[in-house]
Image (cartoon, rainbow, N blue to C red; front, side, top):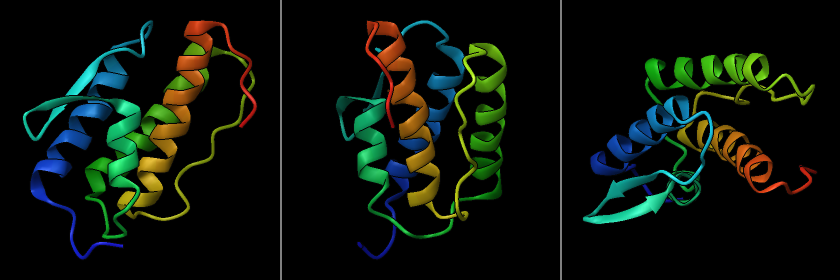
Length: 112
């Protein structure tokens, strides 16, 4: 894994969390990173390569989203909190939530 997560990637990941939280219907909102637009899924892929600890606020945000998502979606799927507070673990959780929402949006069966 790379040494330290770049600051601009930290900002992009925080933006991805906020976009996911605000976009209840469409998973199609993009996140700007390095002058280009990426999907939340792509930002998560980048971030999963970093094991440094995420700030408490980021960890709390993903735990909140997991709880909120269960309530809003009411589908009975289980989403566990991150296994630790690393960016990698937090990004893996957001990736799973995003993928589930994307599958629901496109009517694809979810089997993760």
